[in-house]
Each structure stands twice: as structure tokens, then as C-alpha cells.
Image 1 (cartoon, rainbow, N blue to C red):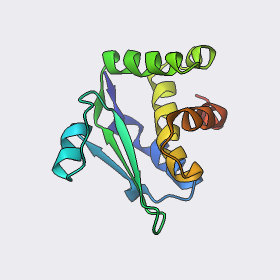
Image 2: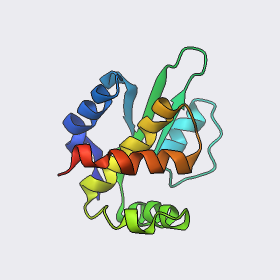
Image 3: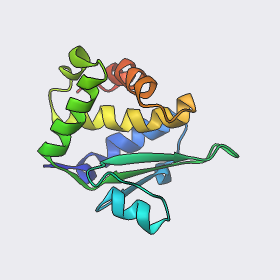
Length: 133
């Protein structure tokens, strides 16, 4: 079980590196439940993170589950492999590596100004070396 709070200093440093304040990140028990409580439709009960960026002013809010299970990590990696990132997924050897990629993927929404998954994953993999273990 990956406990996100154990990595908060790293996650806040990552946000800072991309010009985002620490308050950008909100850790919640369940991302889908948080979404529904905000009036945001979310059909994925296994979602581990999401980024909400406002086009009007560029404000960004990243919501991340406080705990990410091994099954969720396997599912996330499998999804990336299906998108053609098989070699890159092999570099996600630890929970920390996976979390770094996940956070970069969410930050990419702000940096790239897109919600499309593939370019965000490409960017996240390219940025990973900045946070090597």
C-alpha cells in the first residue's frame, strides 16, 4: 500500500518546481467520492488522482487518494502499457517511481494545458529523471 502522505515533501517540491503552490494538492480518502461531492461526475471508482484546471485563470487543483493499493498501481501501469508505454512502465520499479509519474501526469494537465492522457504520460516520463530516487 502506497501512503501518499509519506511523500508530501517530495510532492510539494515537485509542485514548486512547476510554479504551483503546495495548496494545489489535496489528499482525500477517495477521489471518486470527492468528485461526486463537488458535483463532478466521475465513473471511475479506482481513480487515484485527478487534476482540475480552470481555463479562465489557469488555476489548478490536484486531488490524490491518500492510499493507493497495489491493485490500483498494477491497473495504472496496465493502462499505460495499453497506450504504448510498455518500455517506460518498466522504469516504474518502486512505489515512489509510480507516485512521481502520477504526480507529473497530473502536473502535466497544468503545464501542457490538456486533459488528453497520452501527451501527459509522455511528458511525465520525460520529466521523471529530475526526481530519480
